[in-house]
Each structure stands twice: as structure tokens, then as C-alpha cells.
Image (cartoon, rainbow, N blue to C red; front, side, top):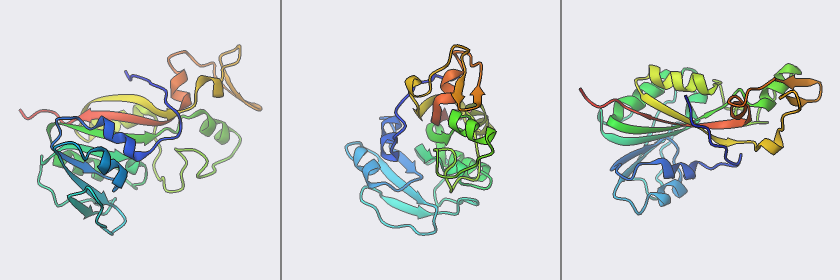
Length: 222
């Protein structure tokens, strides 16, 4: 169901600019990032930013930055006025991610592209920690202190579908290399007295992933 591509764990929001389609003429970025703006500077597109902390500071490269409430977002943008939205892990910070997703879907044009990242609760170090009675924040991408919601790849894709987005394609955006979490002869990942497995080959990337990239579309009109 999902295309899995393992990448290094270190990942920056700005690098999501590579997933913005060349044809996008209006882009909404849910993280105000000057480096992200510079990566889009050579394109013929207008860039909007969203600040969820109640402040909307000016930022080079952004035509406008809008203040919004993460839990009750109401963006001052017309329906179907944006060709691409980029949302980096914000769904994990909302008490209920659906209002945010529905608002982003509302402003996205038919056929437009949505670029999301989601932290992965199924990451092997999260599972091992829980099995040992540990829930330590800021130890992995999924367990950052600001996160209120937790996801697996399947749940993230299903959430986008419920918001009205289609064709979600999922890949591992950041995670461990196989040599960092090898399987033992029984095809288990072992953390001390905790063994996770046996793990089927197609499941292995799901346990290595710290963060997913999901690309989805708003259905064409009609």
C-alpha cells in the first residue's frame, strides 16, 4: 500500500520544498521557515505561511503570514485558492487534528497536492520503551514533548482520507538504517530483554521509521 524509502533520521522542514510540485502557483506552508522560502524562490509561486502560536511575524520570501489557532483554525484564504499545502507534524500537536486537516483541504484547489509529515509511534525504540514501562518525551521523533496525538502509517493515511484527501502515498522520511537495528536469527529486533518480532520483510521498514512523508490530493472537481 505504501512505498517505503529509508532516509537518515536527521531531517529539516525546509527540505520538504522538494515535494512542492513545479506547477504550484500558490503554496501554503504551515511552518514559517526562511530556508524553505529560499528553496522556492526561483519558482513562479506565491508563498503563504501559517503561525500557530498566535503571532504572525514577517518572514523573507513569504507574501503573507497568517496567525491561526491550531485547534480551531480559520485561515483568511478563499476556498480552493492554494495549489499545495505543506504541514510538518502539526497534526500531532493538535488535540483533534481533524479541524486542521479539513481547513487545509478547504483551501486546497481541486487536484492540488498536500504534503504532510507524521511521527511514527510504531518505531522500534518507542515499542521497546513502552514494553519496559517508559514513556520519555523528547527521546524520539514521535515522543516529542509538544505531541498530543500519535500515529502509525496506516492511521495517518486513514486520517487524510477522512479529511477528504485521496491517493495518499506514504514513504519513510526519516528513520534508522537496517544496520542500526538489525534482525536476529529469529527476525526480531532485540532491546535487552525485549524482543520485537518475528518481523516479516514487508513490515521491517515500519519499525525503522521515525517519521513518514505522506503525499495526497484533493479530488478534482466533479
